[in-house]
Image (tube, rainbow, N blue to C red; front, side, top):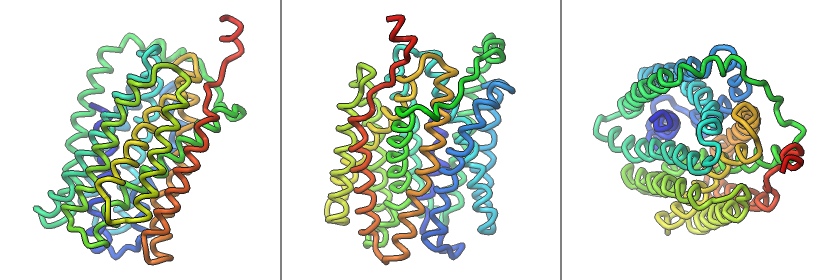
Length: 379
């Protein structure tokens, strides 16, 4: 219920981006900041979040983040200037970043032997929120005659998320003492596997946020109507959603390289087909690449858990992977917008995205789980 609230604040901007650009007179490059800013914050705030959780308590931090997300999502609907639009977008990104950074440790603590399945459920819930916002934002904007209601209505999910975590906090009040005495683990900066995991995660999110930002505008420019463009984006989020639990369930052991490679191959094939024929097979190419990215997301979020032994170490790895991954991923929407402005076409950006998918595929043979020396000796 919390995860469903962690994507509409970003995904809902895609279907209404042309309306926002028209009202505020934004270039493609500046418009890309509406998703690039949350990406940057999801990376930058991943590092201090575990420290905040240790100092203030995990549940307090998550509740504060969800409250910020609610206020910022609602406030953005009333933005009357570009500056306020970007400030409230930053609030959306900060709320998502802080809440999302603590979920991996929660999963590691509560489901240590079923991490991939639990992460698949979490990723599916993220995708449900993405799908709902991608499918409904455009029609609501068309019906209401503007983008503001279509953007602000997703603040309702914030009430649901806050209520859900309040329930969790009350049930786990006995864990407060454990949180206060939790062990601090250093970031795995010197670990080669951690860097490979972070780079894989960066490629996946680079592609994901580029898609949710620019797929709908791409097809609008190609002559598709608002509803048809929204349906293309919805086909992306639906396929992405369906792939999350499937890949999580199929992945039975910690060496997930075969399924990681399959997800990378599907992503590359979809982007290549879209680049070759951007408007000919949208409901084939887009779902193919979405299935690949959906599988890559679930497995990529599980990789830090595969390489750690407890929730605090998992939080350290997760903070590192999110920081590196999202800071790089912020370049996805921005680079597509900048290339579109520079070339006057979306075809060069599509080939760039296909290249990133090829890089993601190339990383998969290297993602064997890191083995801890103490664990090996104990075995």
